[in-house]
Structures are given as C-alpha cells and as structure tokens.
Image 1 (cartoon, rainbow, N blue to C red):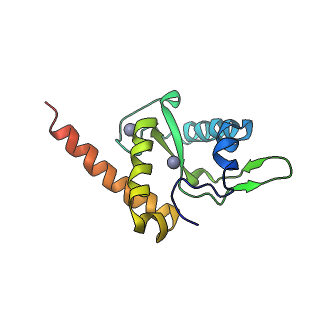
Image 2 (image 1 turned 90 degrees about the horizontal axis):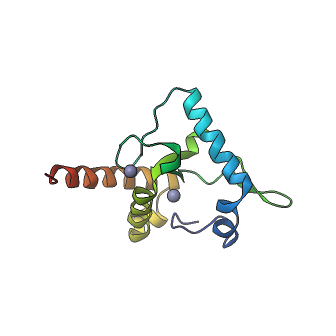
Length: 131
Ligand SMILES: [Zn+2]
Ligand SMILES: [Zn+2]
C-alpha cells in the first residue's frame, strides 16, 4: 500500500469515513484526550498554537481504520493521529504525493515524519523572510 492519499479501502474511505459520525466522534475523543494529557494544541506543521476548530487530524498510521459490519471503525491509537491546520495538512500531503520514496518506500509514519520535518524547515524559512 502506498502513502499517497489512497485509502485503505479504496474510494470508500474518503467518501464515507472522513464524513462519518464514527470519525467525528474519534476526532472529539482525540482532542479530549490531548486536553486530559495537558498538551497544548499546536499544528504539527507550522508549530503555531491553534484551537480544535482550526485543526484537522492527519493519520500517521491507518491500521486503526478497520472495516466493521456496516461501517468503517475508527480504532486509531492516540499516537496514530497528529493535529494540523488544513493548509499545513494539504502541504504535507503534497510533499508525500510528489515524492516516490515517501509515497512507496517508507511506512506511513516514517513518510509523514520525514515530510513533516521538510515542511517545518520550509515554513520556518518563509517566516524568516517575512518582515
Ligand atoms: Zn500549521
Ligand atoms: Zn493527512
């Protein structure tokens, strides 16, 4: 399986899972857990503080997304998800999609971490050059 935005269950994933009650509930639990752990919300891409409504969750691992009888189940571990601004999230996916090695020759977690490091460097560079 590749790390491109290809779903574990082709087609079904983006069409249904990311719009499902199951996923919205999992998302809420993730933010509740993060708050319970006392971890401030920041974007994994640019590093800026953000609130729940400004953040999407990127999957570092899809193994918790499993087909159930009538719907896809969200069994991700807390560590399988990382918060990102929609904009930073989109940039992250572009970095992965454009790179053959990241798309096909790394685990999704490794590909995400390599791409996140790249993204942080380029976003930091943008900030340095902004008056
Ligand atoms: Zn960001
Ligand atoms: Zn993502």
